[in-house]
Length: 308
Ligand code: MN9
Image (tube, rainbow, N blue to C red):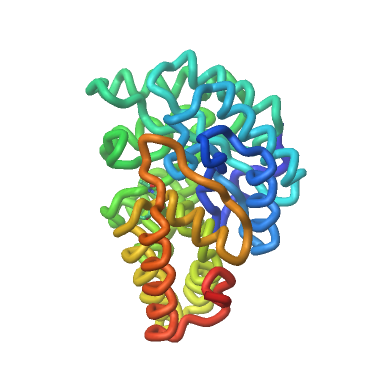
């Protein structure tokens, strides 16, 4: 049982990375440091064990350990959403019950994946998990697991505990449609970091994504400028953020985000196989290119870029 209701979960929410040692073991100490760093950065919540948390490379025991570690460190200061998605309903229910007992504020799940499950099966999956715990469920719409169409979103929203959607698709007109046809209270979290401003403009209540682990400041600027109606300032921050995003995406993505944090701010460790590590040559090149971007785009006030 958590501390916050779904309407209080909004703003800039990192899809928190999971910290591993160089040998690939879960690293509790580093995970705690990363949680403290993000709290210091004043993020509005955390989303655990999702795609960015390399969740499908962990077993349930490890996923539970990540959740317990972060919840303990956060200690109710900001809302915590736990992604409990798995290919099998029973496994997801096991994770959902654990999240509830550990004190999460909401759960979230990708649809069951790999096989092409029918819309009825997908709806059944969400109904079974949602009925297993009294927590709000946030559907996770992402191409990697198979996008659900609008009529399925409508049916999912009719399930009692389904209270929102993490929308990692580029079809942002559907965000407007969700708010219009399903309801203003149905929470939408935009999931494409490179389109955060677009998501907010189309009515999202917040943004959940990978890059808020490393450069939350730029997204806090986007959300604030958008709320103040300052489109030029919001666009400026999005342009700066996108330069960084596209650069980092051209390297092994998770390893790079962890190394960038580790340079001067917080030691976030390594990623897990089969994701590639960052070689020291790559690391040097990435650092140089980031420094150049920072100077060319005059990016200020971003902690990880300050002492490069
Ligand atoms: O939805 C993330 N998606 C994946 C969350 O990890 C696949 C996003 O935050 C992206 O990582 C980000 C970069 O493309 O937008």
